[in-house]
Length: 199
Image (tube, rainbow, N blue to C red):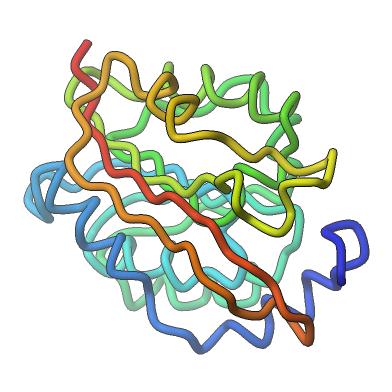
């Protein structure tokens, strides 16, 4: 089984560069008021940039964070978008303060920060959202095959709910199934939550 430390993220992200944006992008935009309310998005773990670029095509200003710079070569597409992508080549846990944003967005990344990294980063993301701001994120659940790894944060549903105190949960989906990661078999347990900040 490949571990996060051994993964060649540049190769993985380059391979994923042609994938379409996730439907979660459209759900987050709708929850934040739609394209007419276009503002700022934080995309944590932007990877190859499919989701960041889709936000920008719809008029949003995106701050895309990733430790791999695969997305950088795609930013020439900014010229053809009504929004823009500002790429931050950094470890997310090193960011002291995030810009204020109407949407915080992260898929398959927050768990890779580890328990300590998630604990210090999550409050900063919540603080970046004003009242009415939207957060759309994935967490790894306890059934995930990475749950036994000490460098991965896996959470019970109760622990996830605790992170969304002060939020209205708009939508939640659970992926609990066998699949693959690179060439290896893997059981995925991923809880996706879309929520609006109440205060």
